[in-house]
Image (cartoon, rainbow, N blue to C red; front, top):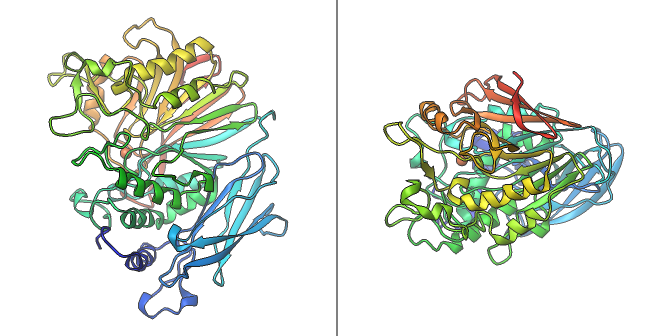
Length: 520
Ligand SMILES: [Fe+2]
């Protein structure tokens, strides 16, 4: 099935087939052509929640099936107990065909810092129940926060045992840091791909909707969404590889219509509030969440507002790997990864009264100087990450240093490897003080660079304390008072949905003492 140029009706039939074929949680065996409407699973893509506040949270679902009306009433309810005997809130939303029958319900008036269960009903069926929670009140003393970071779930690179394990963790939050879908077509899969994308390379609204549906049909991903509220940032593959602002990497570089379609589908499929709905092809993704007096989480958008890449390859936009001496634009102070407005917003929003500021963003922030082909010297930089916008990084870290923030922890993804790093104002000065800590988590399934390449560049980057590209998984964090613990969880075999899980290492950060310490 091609994802491009389809009529809406054709897509909807395709979506249902996908969900059933992939064994979506709760979906009964079904023969689409002969099914009665009452037998069609209406909640085949599961439920999700996100953006918790002290008094509410966003609840998400999407009606499925080939014969949906143009609009359908969807009831939702929130309970204090798993058996739904103590209802805390209930309401109704209208699911519209124009929005792919997505539901973004926003119960208010919930109690802070407590767990809830939620479910939907429509068209004579009831969804599975999800579990979610509210944030503590901003001024509350909070003992603990448990969360994971995850990123980069390329469908055709592996199965998602990592999500199955994550869903079983006792988590307050899931931070997803980008590459929720990949836009690549079926033919881009590796020869031994364990499963394949449906359709060609995605560029249209119908195509993005179909791709999200395929990803969301995975039962392990559904389980992770149903287990805890998510906070999301996006990276490039939700739209197109290596895009920057409204510039795509391929001709024609102006791909505003494609980006608008991708943003629209992203909003439809994610547990985001109605207020996040794209307007004129733009969408606000950066934001903050306070977890009582323990931590402030900052969510950054390093895609929508960035300047174009420095020194692209001839005839192209997008990333490159270049020698600094050949590309002085890498250091140009006018270039920004976040855009001036978001840089200012971040600089003015650090919490000085909490021990922890967690910076949830897309990619590795620590300087990474790559070896030349002979491996003798460093000095080569990947223009796609923070190294391509070094002045923007320096401005951010200058504020951290000036404010003497005691517990800044940068969280990232994108590079399909676990990196643990010291962050400094001057990465070339071994004596420069460490001012913040970084954990860039490995991918859920996307493949990483050869480990030998990472090993070869370590000598040029002593602030990188750990660098492993050969394993898939997520990073699990426990924040308790002045102590942060990070466990690098990795699956034994990312090609096996039933894979076990093990540890690649444990690190600890103490507030007031920037820099991760190895703990196991
Ligand atoms: Fe990725």
